[in-house]
Amino acid sequence: MADSGFLPSPTALAPLVREIELVAAANAMPVLTFGAYEDYFRTGRRLVYEELYFRRRATLTAQVAEALLKPGVSTAMLCDTLWSVCDEYTWALPAHVGGCADPRQCVDLFAAETAHTLAETVAALDSRLDPMVTARVREEIDRRVFVPYSGSLPLAWEGFGNNWESVCGGAVGMAALALLGRSTKDSDRLTVMLDRSRRAMDRFLAGFGDDGGCLEGISYWVYGFGYFVYFAEALREHTGEDLMVAPKIREIAAFASRVALGGGAYASFSDTTDRPWFPAGLLTRLAERFGTPPPEKVPSFHDDHCYRWAHVSRNLAWFDSIVPQVRGQLTSFLPDAGWVIDRGRHAFAAKGGHNDEPHNHNDLGHFILHTHGESVLADLGAAEYTSEYFGTNRYESPYASALGHSVPVVDGNEQLPGRERAARVLHYQANDDGAEFDLELTAAYEVAGLRSLVRRFRWSRSGRLELTDEVTADRPLTVDEMFISRHRPSLSDIGANWSGLVVLEHEGAEASVDELLLTDHFQRPDRVFRLRCRRLAPAGYSAHRFVFRLD
Image 1 (tube, rainbow, N blue to C red):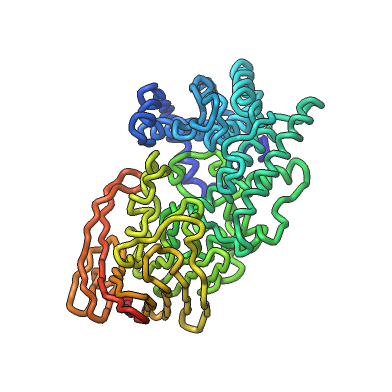
Image 2 (tube, helix red, strand yellow):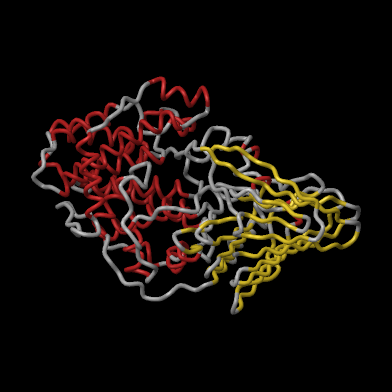
C-alpha cells in the first residue's frame, strides 16, 4: 500500500467514496457493553455483540479512508475513534476467545484484521495524528497481537488449513510490514513474524486441490484467498518475493469464474450465498496477473458487513477498468473438489466431495438448477452462525444436514458426516449441450442391506436434467428423494411444478411437501420447501428416474 493516500477514479469509485464520507461523518461508535459480550456465552448467539462491533469497524474504516482520500481533512474524530478501539477489552469476537488463555491477546480473525487496519493507519497518517494516539495504537498492536504472534506458543488456528490461516497470517503479516523493519531489533522480529505468516499461507494453499476449488464456498474464496493475495502483494512490494507464481495460484484465481451460474449468481455449496459480493480491487489485481474476469462493478461500502480495511483500501488503491480478455468456458469440472457447473440460458451445478469439508454440509450428490436469475432448486447456503451451528448439533440445522439438500434419504437414514463419507466420481463428460456426471454415493450412508447407490446426472443446456438414482440392495428399502427450493411446488399425479420455472416429471412416486420456516445467516426469515418423492427400491437392482425441465 502506498502511504501517500488514494487517487480514485472520479467516476467508477465515486459512489463508494460518497458512502465513505457519510459513514465517516456519522461518527457512530456504539458502546461494546459487557451485556452484549456476555450474551454469546449465555445464549450462543453471535449477532448481538457482533452488530455493535462491526458498526464500530465501519466508522474506523471510513474515517481512515477519508483521511487518505482527503489529505487536508481533520483527523480529530479519527483520533477519538482510534483511542476508542484501543479501549476495547479484546479485539477478538466472543465466539473465538475460548481457545485463548487471555482474551486480550487472542489473535483471531478480527483481532488480526484490527491490527492490520491500525498498523496501516498509523504508518500512512503518522504525521497527521496526535503523537499520544499513535504511540498508544502501536503499543496496543504490539501487546495484543505482535507479542503472541512473535512468540513460540502455537496459536489456536494454526493447522486449520482454511481461511483462518490466510486471514490471520496475512493480516498480521501486513501489519508487521507496515510497522516493523526500521531498526535491527525490529527487522529480526519482522523476519520471525513473516516466516510464521509464510507457513500459514503454505497450510492455507495445501487445503486446495490442484483444481483450485475452494471447498469452503465462494464467499470464503473472497475472504481467505483475498487475504492471501493482499499479503502476497504487500510482501512483493516490500521484499520483491512473489508468492503468487506457483501454478496452483492461477487455478485458485480462476475459481470464481468457474462456479458462476450467470447474472451475478454462483454455486452456493457450503457456508456461503448464491449472491456473493466481490472486492473490485482483488478482481482487478487477479485480472492483471492471471487474465481472470475483471470486476463488473465496484461494491458498496456496506456490502462487506464486517467493513474490512483490506477490502476497502485495495478497492480504492487497485481498482481499474479492464476489458475481459477471453470468454469463460460454459462447463467447469473441478476433479479434486468433485464439482460440475454448466451455464448458459439456464445453469446446473452438482457436487461430490466428502462430508468432512471445511464448513461442511452433508450434501454428496446435491445439485442446483438455476433459471430466470434464481436458483429454483437451491442450495440454502449458510445458517446463522451460533455456538450450536459450530458444535455437536451442527447437523440438526437444515442448512448443514442432508435433509436440507437435494439428496436421497435411504430407509429413513440421511447422509452422515465424516471424511470416510465420500463420493466417488465414476464418470464426467462435457458435450456440446451440457454435461454428464455420475457419482457413487454408497459411502455416505449407513444402511443395512444397501449395497450400492449411484446418482447419474444428464444435463442439457437447453433446460433439461435427467436424474437417475440406481440402487442395489439385499432387501427392500424406501428411498425418499428430496428436492429443496424456496418456491412452493404444486403437485400433480406425475410430478411437480415450481412457479412455472422448473417442472418435474417422475414415475409414480408418492410426493409430499414439507414447509420449513427457518432463519438465515443474518437472522432474516427464510421460507423453504422440501419436496419428498418416496419410492420403494426392491431387493436387487432398481433405477429411479426424475426429469426436470426448465422454462
